[in-house]
Length: 442
Image 1 (cartoon, helix red, strand yellow):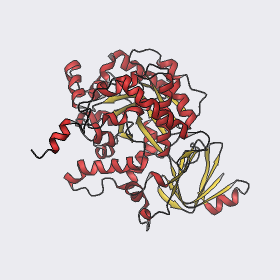
Image 2 (cartoon, one colour):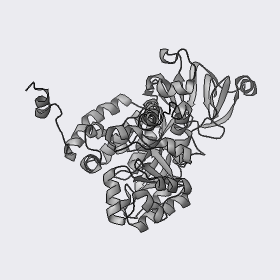
Image 3 (cartoon, one colour):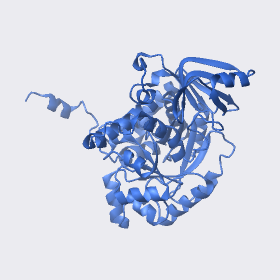
Image 4 (cartoon, one colour):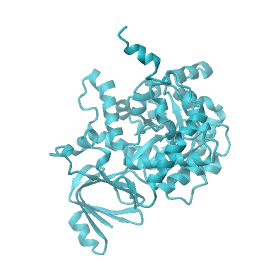
């Protein structure tokens, strides 16, 4: 298949008059359109007039089994995993865990994500259920198994060798969930296997203070102290870092997932991603399961930096559009240990890409496409989503399975799971008596 769009988003930026050859799920050639057309006359030629060909977004931090409770987190105190996420996931069985993961995968694909990293579920099910859901949807997945007890890590890392879409990973949700020996052993297993060790670090003030009280060190500093930081480590959030901890991340090559929407919805702070970039700290962008929309994620990534750090320092560009596109694609893939697999339109990498409609009023006239994609583009412009060379979505709908049936099942099952979970909200009825009292003239 020889794709000839108006514009291709390459590592060096948007480029016109380029063509891309896809064969067996891989990019086989990228170059001048005329030259590739002449060299590959037998290929099926697809002219994509008025469209951009770009890498699929890579979600560096997700929770596939939390999709039924998303709005339960709205308006709640920041550290809600014990009040909302643990009971929700514990209320899942194999059927509803599969349904939740497939619903999340559909939302991710619709938002332009071709890869997501699941940070590990607390649901009492085998993670193969999640692998089945993402493979059925056609989504590439870095799939974690939680190994806080130190068991089953090696077996999980060897489990999915035959899959083109599932890449195993190990996780400990928080450093406090495992002994130092387990943390170090898990990190070492991942380093040996070329996988990533996923762990939440320095996300909330309460977690930082618990770490100080229990081990006398902050989470990142503690992982560094026990030798669990390295290129194989992926720390989620990292919003509350000291300069020393930033230096530890930079020196060890550890990666971070920057989750700006999570900061806005349920966080204590915004990670200093611009400082990460300046110090050479590897980072990708993640949704944390908030909303599966790649264009809104890069907009949030840039906006959060501008509001938190750009305005106080007079920085009007905050990295510009290209930085955020790169960290949402190629550098997110790098943070997940998939830098050689996906994230770029480049020869030898998996054909994970989006076909994006440029003939829209938001991008007309176009002056700087990278900036415009970050601030103006939307999910509705995604004409096609291709993963591993296969068309997975066309105009927002799967091509080979019934999304409408899935949505009906989720609409019925989701509220049942939430009721069974017994989630406790601080203000369970925002339109109830307290809201009425606030509206009262008296």
